[in-house]
Length: 306
Ligand SMILES: C[S@@+](CC[C@H](N)C(=O)[O-])C[C@H]1O[C@@H](n2cnc3c(N)ncnc32)[C@H](O)[C@@H]1O
Image (cartoon, rainbow, N blue to C red; front, side, top):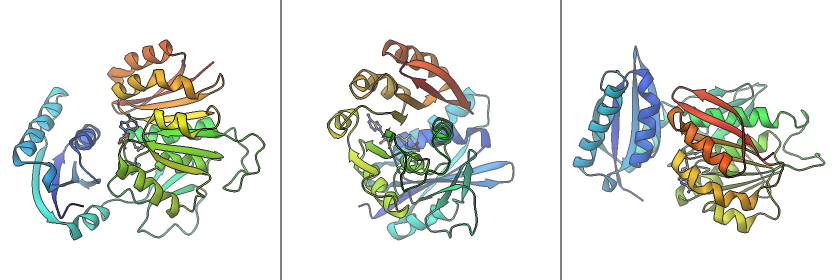
């Protein structure tokens, strides 16, 4: 575990938030938060000190500048400082507030009290070092798609299943487990949550406990489609996969082994300009693209097997 961390502070135009989050995620940052500063946004992110040299931070600054100038926006200002282990966990938490997503979800940070009354499905989260606080457009698109897909399940369906035909889902690239927990709350009988990053798997385990989801209903595992092939007893009813477009395209052929003619899937992590390449790859691998939903520069493809 790192003893010291870089705290990065990026003051930017609000329209740049998503591309900055994505850059930071790829840079290896753990935990990002955003605060409104008048007409601007202040993005904070944290990275173990040993993972980046000053030169890397300078390069990051250049990338952020280029990303902004490419879309005709003002270059953001990046500042950094070193902070201690004890401080990093608490420093970004104070900027992360409960957030409603779609018609049915409320994301509640683990350290804040639950609302006294709500008609929403509450996902309690402490993402720790994993991606998935719910404030990224791609996560929101996936939750909204799951909501739409799974609204056919009986309204009375809750954690205690009474449903005759269980819905079994895989969350590929689970991060904090936010989509897996969302799927369980919407009525999935069982969700397999896989991620190649062991810290993400650890985070999904913790969030499973935090949301009182039983180990039978949410099964986290380190790996990708390969591990799913070993874990599942029968083909999946649904897949949700929020990873980068290139990774999705690479994983598609392997997915054929875990689906059946009625399987549906939600793919996100796709920039609008990459949507055609992903849609073509999906069709080449036996999927029918039903809808494309967009938010900011990101999109989500809702697809089905037949
Ligand atoms: C954008 S995050 C999504 C997290 C969460 N599902 C959400 O929607 O907020 C993508 C996750 O995919 C994981 N990942 C990257 N490549 C992967 C692969 N080939 N197989 C499985 N997971 C992968 C990363 O470690 C990361 O946690």
